[in-house]
Length: 242
Image (cartoon, rainbow, N blue to C red; front, side):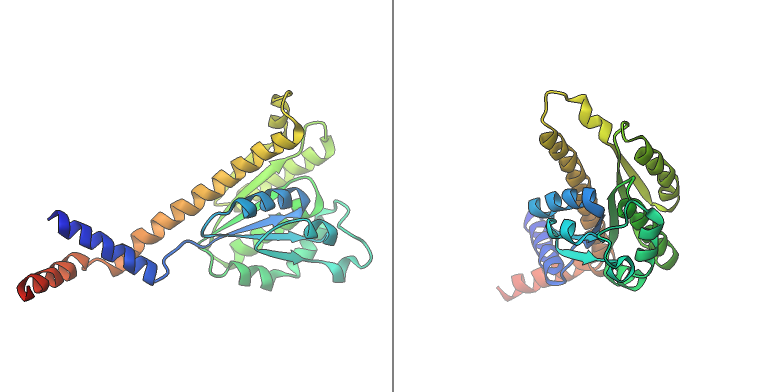
């Protein structure tokens, strides 16, 4: 019986590999702050996760490492390099890219939207994207947002206001507060950010792994429900032939 169980497991694994059963998690990172976190995720790597950096700042986008980069808004901004912190401008720019967003998210099992709130693209870009996804798809959309430091009073105020809206549309919203970085005064700022990026990476890795488990479970339930009978019949045939 032990051999039979082993055979079944091997056949399941071969079929899962043959059918290409794997998760497709799309991570959209909006703006410069999220771009740095996106680079960290991309360089470290998560099998089944695709990182997409979205920005209106061409120079900032060039510094990001990702599976795909999307430079938006050149037709709207003209000679201006960015949205100058205007979230409504970012919302308008993203609304003009609705078709691209839907196409990019079409085959995703889970969509993760990552941003540093308080600025233009990080706030307006994410908010418009989640509205587009919720109004036009039935995707599971998880948002991961970073709040500005308390000393950035105006940015933080804008961030909290946007957060209320973001939570309405999110399947799940994960909030990271930049003030946490100040709780380790002996740690260098660069290292403190790295710790935060590692936390973001871990969240995305867990989401991807959970998605993988669920996809394989559904595959087994739908396509491998008769696996026991098939393998046992094949096993008996081999024994008879021997």
